[in-house]
Structure formats: structure tokens, C-alpha cells
Image (cartoon, rainbow, N blue to C red; front, side, top):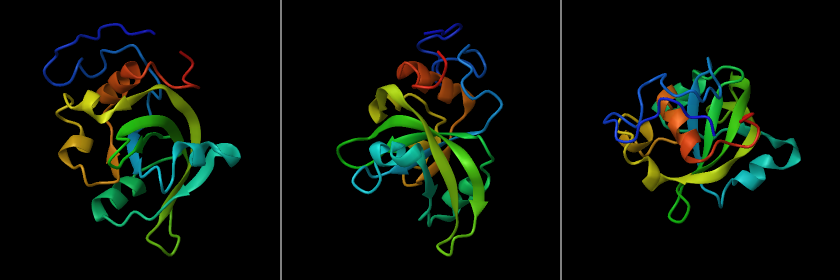
Length: 162
């Protein structure tokens, strides 16, 4: 694992913005997409070429985040629910926001499974992470420094060229 300039205990979340040398998805916006594994799991996403429509988002703020997604932006795939609250994979946006009669959607493609899933409890120290500040949203942005640190916690993901 290539991690340079990464310090445990930095108060705003384990490292300064841009200090990590893990450059997965550099220049792209990053997000987190939540799903109940009983409704849509990582295995469902990865099947059949890994492309699916991400729809059914009702909250206006979460829809705003979906609308802001661009081609090739990266998203953590997060299993929510009572048993499995963790990031299990990474997807890429392959079709930007479009109206689908149910409020709109984006299409995403599975890029790779996390080498080690990252549990919610491991992310509690990221004070500026919307997942923790707005836990009811199903789509949240992920700042670059948090993305890099979560990737480091999970030993990266398959397909990240580490």
C-alpha cells in the first residue's frame, strides 16, 4: 500500500487534504451511495456486467447530489441496515442524471470490491463526512481526503491499480 504523509490522530480526519499519495480517482468528484443489501447488494451490482440504474432517491438533497454527478465520478457502494453498515465496493458513473418517471436516476458500473470492507465504526473520526452529519441521506459527497483515507483503511479496491 502506498501511503505517504498520512498521520494518525490529525484532528480533522487522519491527514490533510491532498497529503495522501493514494491518487485513486484524482480529479473526479466522489460520492457514497447507500443501499440495503437485502434490496440491492454488491453481488447484485457486480452481476451482469456491473451496470445498473441508481434510482428511487426521494430526498431533495440526495437528488441534488445525484444531479451533480458527472461521467466517471467515483462512488463508494455502502451497505446500510442493522447488520452491515460498511463500504463494500466502488462504482463509477457511466450515465449522468436523467429523468426516469420516478424522480430521476444515474447509471453506475461496478469498478471493484474493497479488499477489506470498511465498517461505519472505523469512519466515526471523520468529523466533516456527510455520512456522519446527515446519516439519513442515501447519497452524500465524499471529500478527497476522506476518500483516500477510507481507501487506505480498506487496503484499496480491486481495480485501483495499487
